[in-house]
Image 1 (cartoon, rainbow, N blue to C red):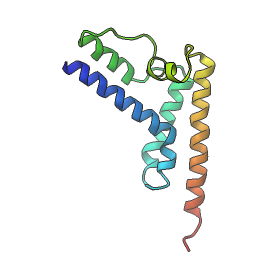
Image 2 (image 1 turned 135 degrees about the horizontal axis):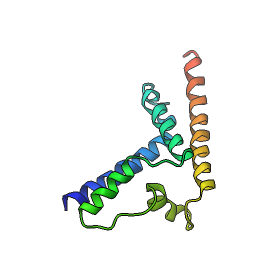
Image 3 (image 1 turned 30 degrees about the vertical axis):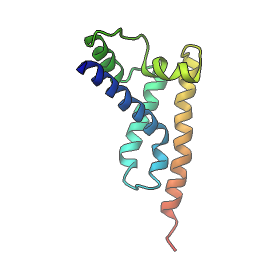
Length: 123
């Protein structure tokens, strides 16, 4: 039971991290210190996608599920949990690169506004 709960917690943390990677630049508008945490996290997320890598949280969750007596899963977190919701087909390399590029574009938009607002003097 404890391993299953730990695996579920890892899934929640993983999902929150993905949302943070994609949308954290917009949170920086509110909390000016956040880019120091978000930019490295976003770079990590983009590199994992573009390099066809595996986030360390994926094998951790898989290991916890196996220790709980549950079947592990094949593929990564995105392919196992998110892709079936968003896309019914398998995660292809093209889709993976598109996701990485999407993260870059969304964060570029967020940080352009962030840096423009910081360079404009308060009135």
